[in-house]
Image (cartoon, rainbow, N blue to C red; front, side, top):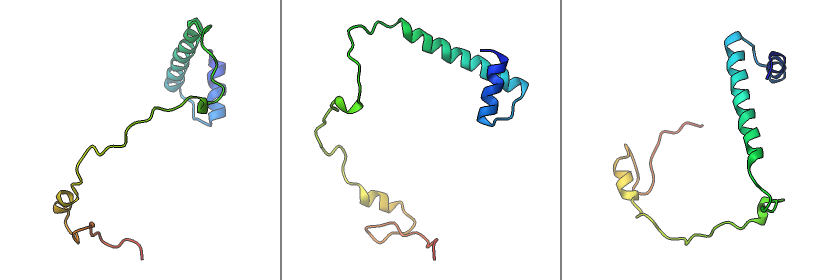
Length: 93
């Protein structure tokens, strides 16, 4: 990652470039590129490519109630309620 590339990125991003920011961006981009290059070392020979994320089926979970309806408990803490809903000041006319 060189200064010219960083300047180009700042220009294309319409960011204001300063010395400290440029060095940080340059170091961050180097780290990102190193991480991406490390992915090349992973053996993917026996892994079939995934052409569409919809090819994989998602896990299905049982639809069960995991908590009690505590509406009355929540409404007790409200400054104002009608027993079923919070009452709030009108903000739109």
